[in-house]
Each structure stands twice: as structure tokens, then as C-alpha cells.
Length: 122
Image (cartoon, rainbow, N blue to C red; front, side, top):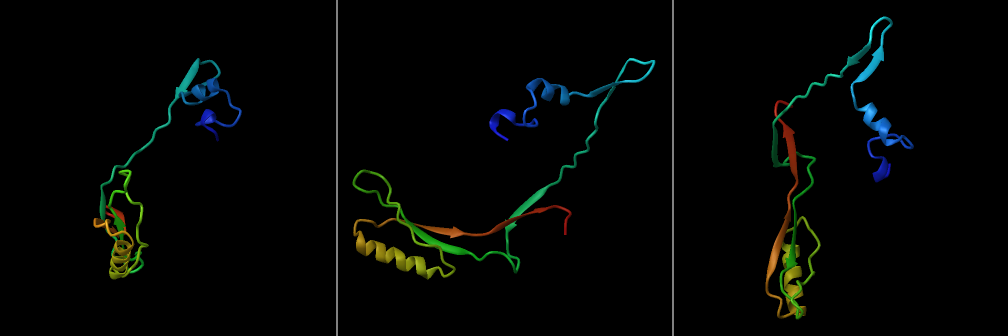
């Protein structure tokens, strides 16, 4: 569906959409229009967010990125690849420093998997 038909069937005019979202009306013999509504039940639950430490969780990944500013005051976009071993990105930072002696600021990037749990579920 494109942005113009959102919420309605393809080719369905806008007036039909408005009519479709109202309570339905049907006529019974001998009576006027009868209005029916649809009832919905919502259950609100609490969610908890915690680091994913299950056996099948993705591993922690480590990296570094350069924070130095270049001559035109834009940030250096250099960054190490992520690794399970935290010393590998540190090696990259020293190599980047050797190539660019003026780049002395770095940020450690840690990718830690998190999981959301609905309270009451096992």
C-alpha cells in the first residue's frame, strides 16, 4: 500500500473508509436501523528490560571509534570492527594513532544484547 491508501483496500474511496470505521448499521424487518458495536479487550502488562544472558544470546562485542576532529572541524569517521575480544579494538586504536598522530581521543563501543520480558511469563 502506498501512503495514499493507508488503512483502506486498494482502490477503495475515502468515503468508504469513513463508513467502514463507524458502527455497522443493518435494518431488521419492522424495525429501524440497528447499531452494533465491536467490543475489544485490552490487557496492559509490565515489561522488564535486562541484559540478555541466556545461553543462546549474542555475545558482547567491543570496538573503538575515533573522536578527533579533522582540519575542517568534522569528526573523524574511523572506527574499528566489532570483536568478541576487547583487546583487538585497542590494537586498532594504536594503529590508527600511528597513522594519524593528532588523533588522540577515542570512545569505546560496547554492543551488549538486551531482552525484554513480559512480567508473568516464564
